[in-house]
Image 1 (tube, protein in one colour):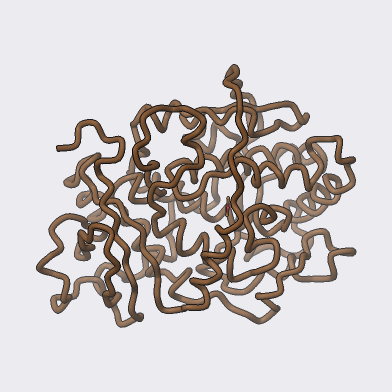
Image 2: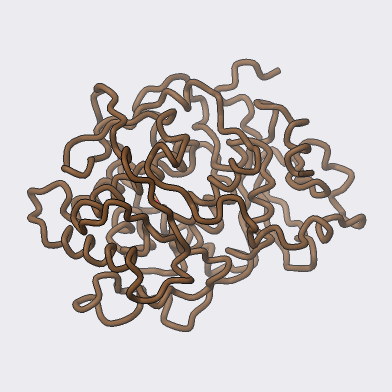
Length: 388
Ligand code: C2O
């Protein structure tokens, strides 16, 4: 694959780290900012022993909710699980709102722990639902918003009282669609062309120098995967989904993140390696998560590399993938006004992004899909010892 070859030439530690701000939809940008306004401080946590026991046993297959009937066994199990978690007393750590508090207290955004942390959070939920819904091979469905722009019907039907998956989403009434510049196949194709892990899944906190717990929620660079479809969908739905402290009270949160996690698995399946950096690999999420019994589950990033080892896989890991459809050809644009300054950062075989040293730049996306604002932050000094 051309994408793979072009990434190899970059070499780890020499990439421009950046965030892309899609500037077409001003309203969506406001939502995206609002989603992050509510992040609280990271609670202190003591280092403890690692126990990588969650997810051992059955390997469930996460499937697209798009193809599911309302009484699909995994959807039905999810409904039973959410209902059971809501019915647990607040003294039980598996109680739905207490489980949501885990996100509020610990979730990293805007740095390289974003993907592994949310992967662990989903695995923890999957374990609890397997147990409470009594379906040992339960696997979270995913909401492939690229292929399914409207809210999955199973999450809209009924009111919150009769359907545990329904939830107030004031910004996103039935019939509303997510826009192309947020979840379209060109967005996903660009993301999958990211040359290394920190360009793909957000970059380390500026100046990070250890695996100390204080680094879990410090800000590095938020990449397009996190900023655009991830933050964008949160904001577009509104309600709890649009606020960090409350987002995971909405059951759609976990299907949204299942799709983000799937894009990560897809990027890996295309031959892209995750960061080898010990500050990433050895970082411990200590006393963040719980297992199916409600006991603490401590896991480090290294323990979150293989989905199969964590008890799940995706039904379409090997593709074909919506983002593969005829993008490379369209991206080869000889008239690209940025062509001359684009020596640093290749994201697709024929598409290169500018080095901007943090400045905001407006460029035209390929195939006339609209204008994009790109904020490229060159923080290559941050924590990369071998950097020249
Ligand atoms: Cu921690 Cu989608 O958010």
